[in-house]
Image (cartoon, rainbow, N blue to C red; front, side, top):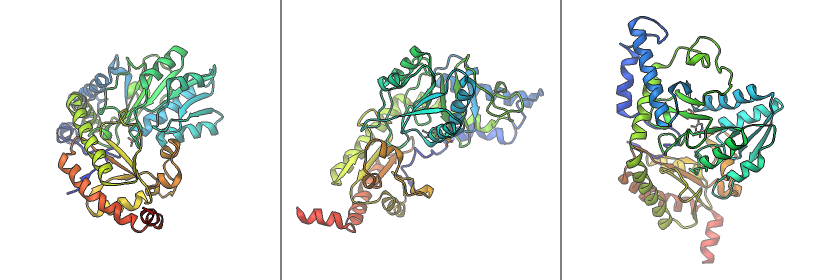
Length: 391
Ligand SMILES: *Cc1c(COP(=O)(O)O)cnc(C)c1O
């Protein structure tokens, strides 16, 4: 049995979600575009899920929800789509330095096509302010894209304030809410959000399914050309089991927010305080309370996050580090660098993300296992030895 502390990377499908999906793999296999009964049944299931997603984010209408293949696709569509359809009006886009690569690399692609991108810096907690956004808006700005909550350090951005600034200035506002939906309250109306990306597998739904909220009246080209699915904006036969699972998952997650948020904040506090009490030279990355309920990210001086991960894995603990080494590069995370951490400290960061299935006993297990691992690794560090001997 594993101790799963990597819920920001992906989550386990909940049994209720799997149960809802299963019939759509076998007996209810009709194509939603077909007119006979088994086709109409799956069409109805897709529309039920669309309504579930719309309700979860307080979208005015279900037909403003478009199913995609995940968060990355939604981010690509939002940014390239708006750049394409509003390119006549202007070619300037505002985003932040700490976005997910699905946003950052899309912006870099647009730069190669002649668009100008402003990457707003963040403060030491990873926060960007509405004032910064306001000051960066120009007459040729067509889009602001600021993530709802950061996937590495868990910082929750002032999305409602940014939305108000954008609406006032008449600039479209997209938010990558992949880490937020199903974890904290999200309200596209109250927050003046024009486009919002989400992904099923980050809230106990299946992988390979996502959605985008596109406010009514916004011009955006089709992402996939072909059939008339998704109101002709995203062609291809629907991923019916995925869509049904995502609908059930979002409904469950949002209905449980009132109990799940305080429970996870309790576990988060226990884990952070427990680590701080037991391990010296440790510092919390991200904001102390403008933070995703399940996110803990801590920098340990003198050691490498990757080494901690290997030793944690030997104890069946799944976690993630502050560098992108796992993806074959040795660069420290752009998010940790953006909050002002020097390279060597960024390398010593560990991310532990909790979720629906995480228990207090599992947190205790981490608190017993982690301190000796950090101590053992530090004993191999000459710098740590020097500092210890000085004391
Ligand atoms: C996971 C994630 C994505 C990508 O979502 P996929 O469904 O895996 O493509 C995008 N943005 C953020 C903030 C994420 O955490």
